[in-house]
Amino acid sequence: MSEAVDALARRHLLRADRQEDLCFALWHPSTAQTRTTAVVERLILPREGERNVHGNASFESHYFTRALSEAAQAGAGLALMHSHPGGMAWQGMSPDDINTEQGHAAAAYGATRLPFVGLTMAGDGAWSARFWERTAPRQYARRDCATVRVVGERLRTTFMEALAPVPHGTEAQIRTISAWGNKKQANLARLRVGIIGAGSVGALIAEGMARTGIEDITVIDFDKIEIKNLDRLLYAKRGNVGALKATALADHLGECATGARFDALPLVAAVYEEVGFRAALDCDVLFSCVDRPWGRHVLNLIAYAHLIPVIDGGISVRTNRHEELAAADWRAHTVTVGHQCMQCMGQYDAGLVQLEREGYLDDPTYIQGLEKGHPLKARENVFAFSMACASLQTLQMLAMVLDPLGRSNPGKQLYHFVGSFMEPSEHGKCSPECLFSDIAARGDHCGFEVTGAPPANRDPVVKKLPTDTPSLFQRISRALKHLFIG
Image (tube, rainbow, N blue to C red; front, side, top):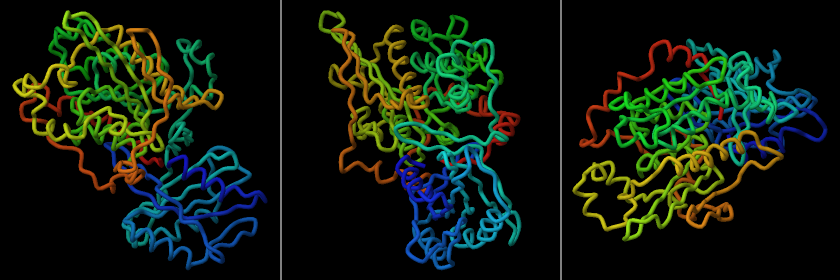
């Protein structure tokens, strides 16, 4: 859920008199490759006479009926939230809790065709959650979620330790853990991080994540290594020329990871293809390391509709007519609900998305016909600039998760190599006409179709998706962390 929804729930559920309270909420599914997430869109707060507070809390039938009606009209699922003000961290369920949720699961499913979801807020603000899944006529089974994520200025995650156990620090992580402590390290290490684009910036970020102790990394890239990449790809050697980037990077990460249990999943696809899109939805945080408009457009939608933070960045290099370096700039920013989206900040041109869909951006004739200095012609980059950009993106992610001294959002950062200065950070807002704000927390129900087949003129060698799609073992192991609330 968003921080705004979480804040409203806190104000309602954590009462000054320390009694329990409750409310309903609407949620939308976010269906990934191996997990299902309930994205909580908004609360349905009780009106006078719709619920009773008596130490515990209970609701009247007409409140449940009103909530069901709103869920059905919105095409959403229904969730019941209640508080355990005396508890801390992930909460278990009392017999009364179970009877209440299980007893209303059939009606909720009948009205919405989606599982009834239960959420509990502890006194410290930690959430726990479960789905009530239909297993047979009039029979509903509880499926506990592995995590609950609150997304906004920071990423605050509560873990169910039975499904997402605390990772053990290793000897290789001693200095990392000493910087921010075991608790922050445990929260960081259990996140599933997606690297979208295994180029020079993505490679540096991925290795940084693996060495920091992240235990689950997904690498999504359809391209292969060429000789011209060797000046920038940290993991590539001459013997890797012709190999798939995603596979080569994943293999490299396995050699440098510090986590006790490490899994790097390579996916040979673009994020705008259905398989790549669903794999991205499996992640808790995404790094945008792409330089084309379609990929950024897809990631922009994921950040808003599916509430998965996207750490985006980019590099721009210009030379003058004497072929001398005139400018080299790199930027980083976090894209999520409440922040300015990539389209509004000018990171991609929405008008070019359809051109890429139709293959024009892979057509040399079309590219050559563009005016000199057009952004689509810019391909200049060097290893040092990639390192600097990757560092900014990595620090944006760490600030969001670690929230050092309550300062989690550095804003948009832009550094100029020529002149050697960083511009003051900005915290921009989307324009009033922005469509992405309207689809926040709508998940699969957002109404936008952003995926499609790759352009027909893309190199067919790199389109053999079955080669590196997850193995059966990987699918089963990842499915153990099946249900999530975000």
